[in-house]
Image: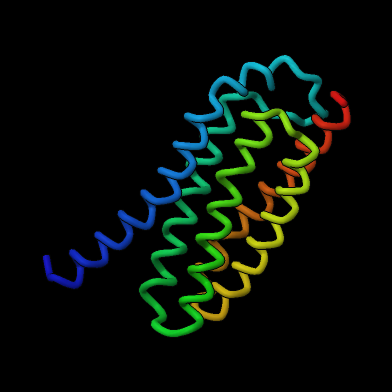
Length: 160
């Protein structure tokens, strides 16, 4: 295996582990909130609880692959901006679960989620300037966040 191949594998592994670790820590900190969530009235189309960790794991893997592509394909201010937006959205993603599941602050979580969605859309465009493929990998995330906003709003509305 060439040194370049080893370096690429390392970049991709680290890039995938970062969002998985952020999501895992958030899930660990909010695990007790899932029981409370299960007892709440939820809007139509609410998926079963088992689906959430599966979807999020896939989204975190796609995020990591996307970030690795940005890291590989650029080395200037565009990369710095794109990866900065990536880091900010990871922080927002982490705290949404804390607000929604951990603290039960569903209206604050909804507002936070709209900010997260805005940051992810900005990240999409920043990624697209560097790598169309990296940007396209964010489309499922944007769609899931829209669905999460519907679920967040519905849960807040039905339980206020």
